[in-house]
Image (cartoon, rainbow, N blue to C red; front, side):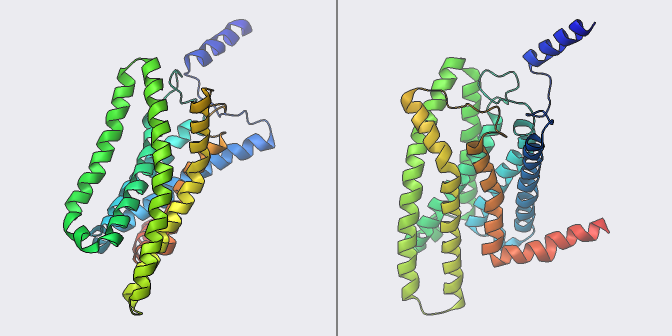
Length: 300
């Protein structure tokens, strides 16, 4: 009887239907990792949902393009936080041939957050370097179209990868990730250095005013978000580039919840809304004055 049960369990594990914590909860270290991943997933959801609600209920924030990109980042990060309960907490290996894979949907949420921050950086660079042309070119509707475009593109790629053979899917993923990472690092560093220099020069020519201080805070916030973004994503970028160059296997950890390089981008998903709240006064006032107050009133 016990042999039959043991055989049944082995078969269950092979088919990938047995979902248990990624590490057995038989040691203090494993329990700490388990709790950390649950707290991380919950923090991603709560913080990004708070920022999302703050922007949605504030008309003046929704009228600004940078907050539309912020909304996009919040939505993708909320989805990433929810999915992390699966790929980070449970014994799930989200690879091409895993029976427990998510068909590239979970990595796409991280990719969408990645693209939203890139688009926001390019948007701010355009606004600073050509403010008059920017106001005519990038209307709110065009900004929404840009956001919709990269969401559609991301899930179109997901559909293509899921329709082709496993070998082709791996090649497409490897080549696209390698090229994208190289260009992203160059663009992020180059754009932000130039953005900071131009903005600092322009602000020094303006007379002291509340508007100038607001612009300075906005520029510093964008640069700060970019710095933490690079710190969180560079390790996995370099790892993938090196692995692709030498043709070795990149994914050596049990799952995403035990891989420090894959945990960093999700920790960035916690840090980014904190930076937004800390650096944007209207957002902070809406969050503490309306959203959290409304939530506390409903509890009572």
